[in-house]
Each structure stands twice: as C-alpha cells, then as structure tokens.
Length: 305
Image 1 (cartoon, rainbow, N blue to C red):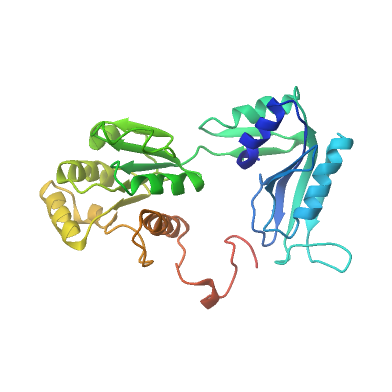
Image 2: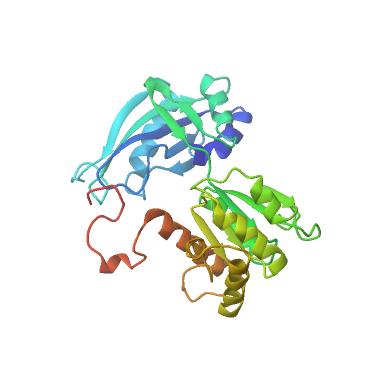
C-alpha cells in the first residue's frame, strides 16, 4: 500500500475515488509481500500490483468492483491454477482485502501519515493492519559523480538516502535529486551524531584520506550492518594502513567492504550502484550470490517453493 501511496493520494486530492485490493497474507511461494496493493481509478487506470503478473487481472476486477459496491470484502487469490481460475505459477496464494477509498474517508488520513519517515501502522477495513517499519538509512559519504546513481538506486530499494560532504559546491539537492537529505559537513562528525543501527548502510565514495580515514573510524566502530569504501586496491591498501595507524583493529577492518561492491563487470555510475547494492543485499540476506539456475530449493526465502 505504501508503494502506491503518492499516486493514490494524487487521485484522491483531485476528487476521484479508488477501488483498492491489498495483500494481507501470503501462503507458499509468492513474489510479493503483505502490503502489496493494486488500486483502480473510475476510468479504469491501474496503480500498483500484487503479484508478478499471475493474479493482476483477478485483483484488478476485485478492486474495480468496489467502486460500484463500497462494502469491504476479503478473498484468497492464487493457489494451484486450474482450467477455470487463475493462480500463481509458483503455486502460492495471497489473502486480500478489497475496499473503496474516496475523499473524506478516514483511511485517507492514515494514508497521508504513511508518507513520513518512521514506523507506521496502516489500519485497513475488516480489522486488517499493515505495518511499515522505519526505512533503513543509506548514508553516502561524498557527493561525487557516482553518488546520484547510488542515491537513486538506494531510494528505489526503500532506503532513506542521506548524502554528506564537506564541500558545499557539490553537496546540493540539485545535484542529488534522489537523496532524502543532503548535508554539508565533515562526515565523521555527522556520523557521530547519527542514530546508526544494524540496518544502516554506509558507503564511502570519496578518495580523500582527510575525509575517508576519520569517517571510516566512526563507521567501523558503529553497529552499521554494511560499511563499504570505493577505491582501487592501491588506495584500499593505503587506507587500511592509515586506519591501523589510527588504532582501528584488524577485527574492525575485517568488516570493511573495500574495494566496494561485487564483481559484475560494470564501470558506469549506474552499473557501479547495482554492484554496490547487490553486495548490500547479499550481506543482508546471507545469500550465496550464485545464479539461481545452479541452485536447488526455494527461490523466495522463507517459502517452501
């Protein structure tokens, strides 16, 4: 539901109504999680999706029907497909609640609140609730040419993107339009004042030891789940030596992902952003990083298929 909030609010603010279907539970292997939603406007336009495509027609019709009949309903979609009904190709199923959303409804206020950073609970009809935890932070140290692409990719993955750089000419919202926050200041001081958790990702993209070493001292002493630094192997070796001289332990240095990212063969800013965030996802999930074609077992973690 949170994924479609901005577009849905745009329709409501213009006086339009929406038929909405929201996933409240999943069974077996499914490509989407609870909270995934599809909304349908009065002129038949679809916003969002609840599956990888297998159930969209059924969900669309269910959401559309709520425009004519506003009573909320629950339904299970999917399961093993048959000649007469669609299903998820993977055999999974999803429970959905479908309802109408119109200007003035109580649910609109809750939808507005969901756009703020922080944990939000969205109350749905028939007693269903969807909780969105606080967005994890992606802190990018350095407003360099790779930073806009990493900020955009990180935002697409649901991170709250923060960029910090001591140079005011480069650290501007205009140069970093995808960042939620852009700060001018010394990164080590900024990181000391930040509430860093195990969900925090810190990516150092600078090549200046005056910035790198103090920032990495703070980052590696924090509980951040991922700390990476860009640079060649020569730069990495020199930077690690400076960190040892500053008193950083070998145990802490073992946490440093440098050179940053996976070896995907890319070099452009966009390709580099993919390589960096692929490593972040790999670390977060504890996955293998190997092609799925060479693996057995469940594709979606936590499922049976």
